[in-house]
Length: 237
Image (cartoon, rainbow, N blue to C red; front, side, top):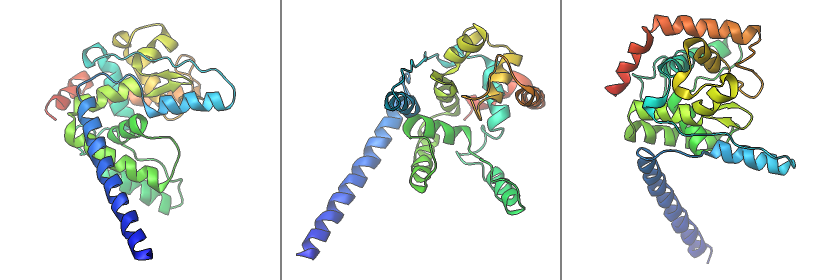
């Protein structure tokens, strides 16, 4: 009896696993071509507001690649993931450096790529657990295999969180500077990229000393990368 029950449980587990794999592949394939009007993080923020009895209006407007500022594209790469055009979803060198720094007594810092952050923000919840990290790795592999680099960055810029309830570059540009996503200049882009590690606590319009220093560093990195012409590498990947 126990053996029969165990076989049934294993069979259902295998079917559920296969269904998850198939559905996740189909979802990633679909989202390669259609605008992304929401994300799991947006849903999570909305639910969190309901739980505490608050009203949170999600500010978000999808903008295609050509309507996104090249300064913002480059600033995010300079700040978050300078090997984005060449890695396949995971920056092994950066992960090794982060691990070695932690072993030498430093704080274990994140080494997530833009691809990983896109997978996490779009499909998963916030927080830390081995299960979430495993799912993040799975979706990272999928989007790297099925999407071109331009699409990954396009989706990331459209779903990144830039303040409480503010998602995507269009909403962020309007929220902080009163400009559309395509009109964000170099300084504004560097400040937006500078607050990404802590967007609900830092302010791109009125940056404190830490954010201003970080934004200046990002602008230097943007120049070191060669300016907007650096983005041409994405078209080949």
